[in-house]
Figure 1: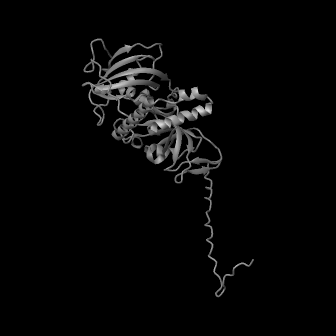
Figure 2: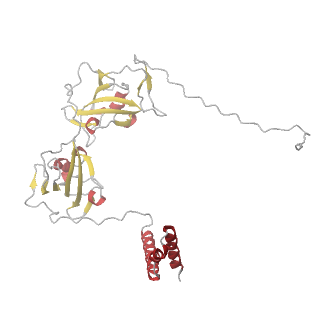
Length: 361
């Protein structure tokens, strides 16, 4: 009798003894020789298959799913597709429900697949097995426009010309792109702040620095011990930025979360302006172009206007800021705790000629 069969019989007998089932129970619990051989063979086959799979994928990487086939009309928008003034073409594949539409600042939850016009798939949340979520002002222009046309539950195919896609950016798919997008959810953005009445020009009651930066405090804190940042401080803020024609181009408020950054990693107007503020202050900054993006492509041009609320100067080993008293005067920084090294015990030295004596009993 094989060792495998003996082991299986032993297990069956032990189970029978524990249950007190008698001879009938023993007969039912003990497998036949054929069943034991079959179980051993199946176990060996499973072990061999597992070993082969591990050898083929030693790092345990997930198996790549096959690409989703491209639609038949991937090469060009068909005659039954609609085209907007910008050149975006689209066709509804599955209607949605309701009148709600996403706004430019809203966050959407979608499934999508993208192809180039030669039918090659380059991205797919469907293949990854998880939805994608993003605010519509943080994606390519064709998505920003197209998703605002969709209702929840709708599935639409978009033909996005290169001018509304990646515009020849290195490392990105080129030419017209085709996307199938299904919209699952719209999360409205917080209401954007109102455009300041003095956004077009620096008002008379603002203070100008030598660099050309102008600042006007909207609220000022007098909390004892509030921190004023230094040139490399890490700060947490809420802010909104406008161009002088009143167009908002960025806002942590509409994203629903504060921003955090070191002051030596932002535009010069922010590095200077934030150092004039303390925790709890809200100020409006008029930042001239030479202290802003200096004509950098893809960035807002001209003088920029920011409303900034300084929430927190983060405690860091360097650049933690300066504490202020209620009058806004610098307070002495607390002394760092003194660290005293523990004395090192000296080894005991016995007098010359002294011998160790055994203890007597």
